[in-house]
Length: 411
Image (cartoon, rainbow, N blue to C red; front, side):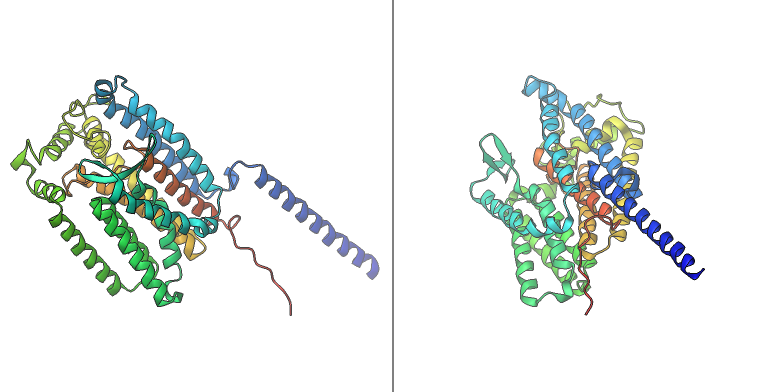
C-alpha cells in the first residue's frame, strides 16, 4: 500500500516537472519568434504607452514640419515637399536605430559607449577648427554631401557615460571621478566655443540631474552649477553673437527690425494663434516673415496654427511623457538602467521645454531643435536613439531580458 502511494506521488511530481519544462520551452520559442525582444502581450504598460507616444510624436512632427516648411521650400528649392522628403528619408535610419537599440541590452550599450563618446568628442573638437560656420556657429562637419553635427549625435552616448560614472559613484576612486568630471567640463567648453550655449546648457542640466540621482552630494552639485553659470556668463560677454541675443531677449521691441526681429516675429506668430489657432497649414508668419520657421522656431508656427488649445495639449503630452519616463526609471532593477531611463527622460523633455521657452521669449534665443519635429537628420536620429534606450529600460524592468546571468555553486 505504501509502495503504491509512493509511485503515485512520484508520478505526480514527474508529470508536473514535464509540464513546467514544456511550458518553459514554449515560452522560449515564443520569445525567439517575436520581432521584438519581448512579445507585445507581456510588455509593461509603460512600454506600450511609450511606443505609442513616440509614434504620435514622430508622425505629428512630419505634419508640422510639412506645414511650416512648404512655402520656403517652394520658393527656394522649387519643391514644396523638399524638407519633408528629406526628413522622411532621415526617419528611415532613425527607425532602424530605434529598432536596433530596443533589441540591444543596456549593459552592452554601456560597454561600447565610451569609444563612440570620445570619437564624437574629437569630432566636436574638429568643429572648432574646420567646422562649417552657419549663422555665427561652427557646429557641423562636412563629409561629402553629408553634414554631421557631433553635438547632437553625442547626446545618447553622454547619457550612457553619465550612467557609467554615477551608477556606483561612492565606489569609484577619486582619480577616476576627477578625470571624468574634467572630460565632461572640457566637452561643455568645446560646445560653448562653437558657440552653442543651448546644447552646453542642456549637457550641464543632464550632468547635474544624473549626478543628483546617482548620489553626488548637493554641495558639490551646487559648486558645479555655479561654475557652469559663471562659464556661461563669460561665454556671453566674450561672444558678440550671444551678447546681442541676450540683450534682444530682454527687450526685443527696442530693435524690432534688427536683433529683436526673430523673437518679435515668433511672438507675433504665437499671439495671432489665439485660442483655437489659424488652422493647419494657414500660418502667415511662415511666409518668410519668421526666420528658421522649420528648425529653431517651429513651435511658433505650431502655436499659430493650433492656438492656445493645441499648445496646452502638447504641454500635456510632454507631461505624460515625463510621467511615463519617471515610472520606467522607478521600475528599473539596477542603478545603470535607472540612470539611463532618467537621462533619456530628462534630455527629451528638457530640450522640448527649452525650445518652447525660446520661442515664447522666456529664454534668450538659442538654436535648439524640438525633438522629432524640427528639421534635421542628426537631431532626429539622436532622438530615436534616446527613445529606444528608454523603451529598452522599460522592457528590461520585467526581469525577462537583459539580466546578468550568474552561476551558483555549492561548496
